[in-house]
Length: 151
Picture 1: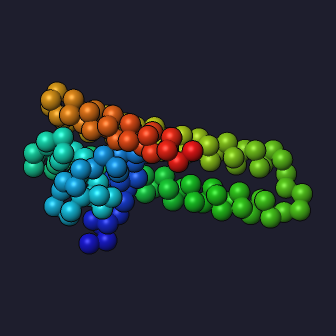
Picture 2 (picture 1 turned 135 degrees about the horizontal axis):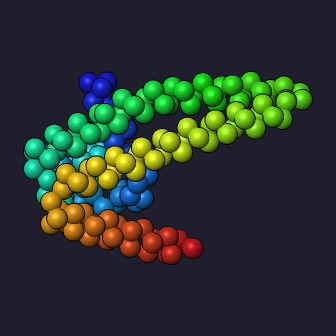
């Protein structure tokens, strides 16, 4: 159960960062009632079948496993930075080098997330890709209209 929650969180975060306001694009589909609790709802809305869903889950699991290692490293780097920042006069070269390490790792994590999204797109048929783009475009338009109304 914990693994499923980690998977769902990892996939949801990955997809959300990759697709912006996709949560609002999830049209209530999926077995869990839709909304933010079902990271595959948008793909189901695009028409994926069970084999495609299994493949997307496999890709996400691989991504999750690799990101877990990177996240552990990132947390260590951030702890190191925190320790440096608690010094009265932290050594500038060391602080800057540590920040560069953090930047490199976060960039790597972001790139891997994009690679996952591209791999997931390859699982979809041409029609499913078009439907997904339509869903994402509609969600972006709703988000934009909502932001404009909130100004």
